[in-house]
Image 1 (cartoon, rainbow, N blue to C red):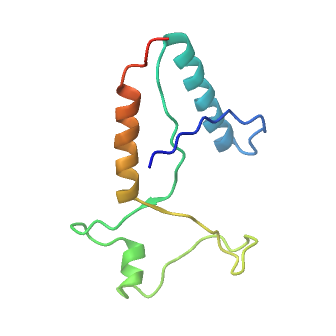
Image 2: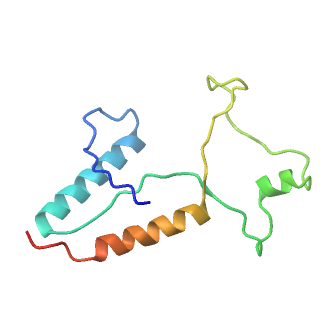
Length: 113
């Protein structure tokens, strides 16, 4: 089921240079789309992860399989129960269809107004 949502750029000021760079990119896209009649879509996702069966295992997979004694996690001063950062992951197999559908949707010519 398609979810259609129009988002407005946040008026809240970002708190980091990284946040500012993301906001400036969105403003640039918006302005370029307006100036040149372009269509675009912003997909906000992060921490894409998936095992690749044909590839050699990475450190996370090696630790999970018991092939290495531990997995180093940096950062112990977060306000979480164990002091480490909480991360949400999206599996690459869930992301690929979304990217394909998004690409198809923005490539379709806009209806005449």
